[in-house]
Length: 319
Length: 282
Image (cartoon, rainbow over all chains, first blue to last red; front, top):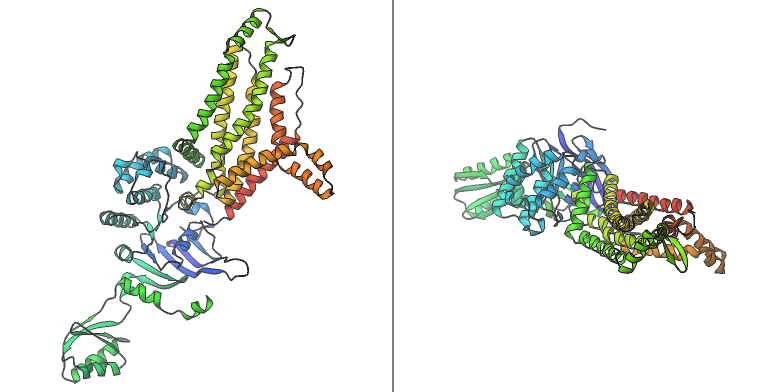
């Protein structure tokens, strides 16, 4: 069964429970998550340890079965092995057998993906060039550094020209130059129409690479959107004005706004734009002069930490 | 076919890199050299020369034995030894195939390919069988050729006995795969396979054991075990009988039952291994 959809990866109401032992309630790893990754999109999956990121990826690849819900790759249910025909995967802490050379590893995985010998032969040098390993083509993997193994893993994931790429901590152990090259490579893949699902703890990597992000928390999607949408979510504004005396601060606080003094200016937390305008009006009515008013953008790390720390009462109760 | 080829390449490269292949063929080569040296002794040379000169017969314990029958006798004795050697070597050389594949970080690389789990496991099984089979035919083939070269007696049944040995290896490999899928342990796979082989030898006397037992249910267990577990001892005897038939007046008397029940055990093991591998979460 193939469903018609714009999304190359589609996850619907995915739920996964693990048995915790006899007479113990099951552990919920995923609690009905939904998301889609479209063609040419770089999608980041964020979350603290145990949030369900790797479980999600494993279900998408058929390594683990979902308790409920469905996932599709290119419209095919993941229970169908054919769904993986155009999917490339780089697992976290992968172990490409050390006795193989780069060429042999790529040949074996290429064959397992249904490629012909000639096609593999042509593809190997091109990919090793892209991951900066051309001179290591006939060296055994056991001699590779961690960063090199990671880059070879990426080449193996790309060998069969997938249009869906799932990467678990792809820059783990890679030097800064290598990280940038991997980012460029992923962007290039996305530009060619590949849907990329990136699973990482490195928020800066996600921020620099991804178009859209989902934050998982206790098996649920706590937030989803573009980096811009997520980091603009909090209504904080920087205000530079004079005079910024205590009576003004008191007046702002009385209106319900959060006020912080930072390096001679105020950071205001307001409920909405009308609230902000009311504060500006209050300043002007007291004869104050406004010289700067700008939204304060949170970093993705701020958003992440806030979301992870936030109390999710229903989930807490369930667990 | 590409998946099978990929697995064959993987299994052979691993065997070469881990010295298994070298040790496997080194031990086999030693056996071949010992055999070649034994058959090249002056006394054997003399007897064979005499036999060739005087009507192809040699004197053994006062009676005349034709050289063909002598060759059959030597080959049948050797085939029984080779049966044990080939079986044990193949268990040691292939028991790691599933546990190694199921290691964390490795299994993801295999299962993320567009290959069904059944196909993956069966491809690995046939790759392992090919590795074991190549050694069986290297050993038996070399000895067969040495005998032909030395005596000019061509006895194809010795070579065909390799098929029976390979059949037993195939059954034990299926069992090792089942244990490997369940436990992910090479050591346990080896212990279980060798254990089944040994236990089966003990159960040859199942009728006498059952008769000696005081309770009926105990006897029933022994009889059931006998029919369930592969008949490695009977099959070893079958190899000997098959090769030695017509040598000392004996005729081929092979029963199909050990072959059928052993094949059923192998098939059941492989089916269970596939079923468990399908259910397993990684």
